[in-house]
Amino acid sequence: MPISTDERLAILQDIQREWLALTRAVRDLSDDDLEQGQLANGWTIKVTMGHVTAWERKLIDEIRHLERGEVFNWPHMDVFNPEQAALDASRPAAEIREDFWRTHNELIQLLETTPILSRELVASDTYTHYPDHTAQVMEWRKQIGRG
Image (cartoon, rainbow, N blue to C red; front, side, top):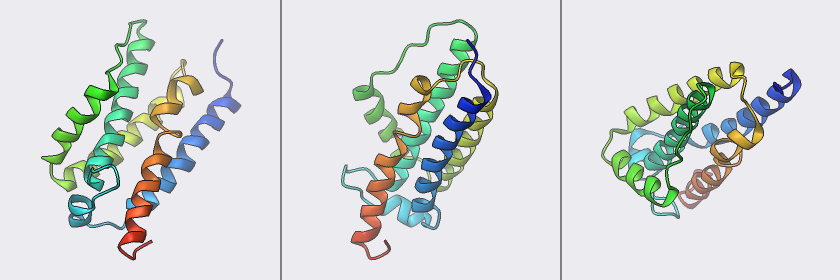
């Protein structure tokens, strides 16, 4: 059964509410902040932004596979996360920032139209995922007196 317009809107609102909180936490940070800001999990803010982007990209790929009726093979988190972190650590902060915004916009455009949208599909890569990283960045900001 297709998703109702009201449920699609509710899902998008949940995503955007948590996305807004995350973006407020990182929006005014410089590239140096992104490169040097060490979070409690050992990642920099830059790597954390790359991590969020990678999981959104994974969700985009998953939705496109499902729309075509194809099986999507989930990456194993314990392998995917460290590999992605290593890749993102070597990328420039400006590139990570650009991908962060572009990928999220692409995801939202897809979620506005895909016939297979459900909370079960998107929650763990979006609105239940973002708050963990928002809290980490906000804790870092407090520690350096910018909270």
